[in-house]
Amino acid sequence: MAKKNSSKYNRYEKQMNMIKNNNNKKNNVDNSSKTIEIEDLDSTKNLDISFVEGKFNKKAIEQKTEILDIDEIAKANEEFKESLAVLNEKRRIWVLVWLLMLACLFLLLFIIYHFCTIDHNKEKIVEKEVIKEVKVVDDNYLFLGDSITEQYHLDKFYEDLPVVNSGISGYTTSAILKRMNDMVYQYNPSKVFLLIGTNDLELKVSNEDIVNNIKEIVKNIKANRPYAKIYIESIYPINNSDDDKISNDVINGNRRNEDIIVINKELEKFAKEEKITYINIYDELIDDDGLLKLDYTIDGLHLTDEGYKKVTEVLMDYIKK
Image (cartoon, rainbow, N blue to C red; front, top):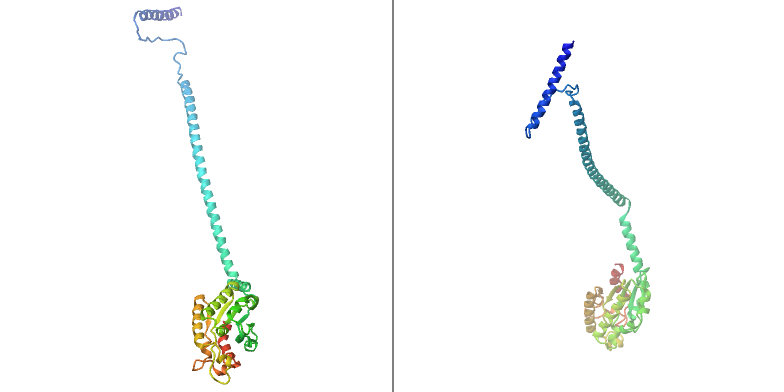
């Protein structure tokens, strides 16, 4: 036993001496990096500590992974927000599309209901009737003129029709112009039949003045009763022959059919310009000689019932229109 212990001691001592020698050599060599391996008897010297290093490396890796995961999460969060915004925008668009489709459907159903349940023709008829009531309260067929009109028994020839006789014996065109309200406007006529001028000829009023006065009468009616239809009758012919039934006033008077024809042509031209109706009764009353038929007159100027009957036949077509 003593031998073994001595051997062990000697070996240890020998190793210590070697370490001292090596240290001395190291000090003698400048900047020497040579390393001498020393066998260390410490039991912890050669322990395997790789598992410890691995543990620290694992923690470093986990820390790095955690850092990377936070960045990725932030990026993913941004992408999610963008995706959500796009999705919300799409939803809004679809909502608007559906609302528009519903509105169109509702409009279509309303149009179908409107045209299937409402009588539009009836509405138009009612509208026209209202307009007519506003413009024309009553139908009044006004006959305006002198004694030839005054002696026209309208109730006899126009039975059950709303006729008004506004003729005054001896009246001229200028006389009517002075009394337009009393003779025309107060009746609110729907139609006016104007026959005037023969007394102007007897008073030697010029053809031009007669025509101008008739024009003025027509324009006044249109201005004050614009809804009234105006009919200008031609001045009636006369018969100034030497027949026993013709009065001396007509034979020796100033009326001439030649002047009447000229005035009537001017009246017809004026009626076309004003877009009113001219009624040529002159040609309906003359005989083959161009005079007022004897059967139609009592004195060469005024008419018999037969003459008024002929006039009524002509005017009735305009009354019914």
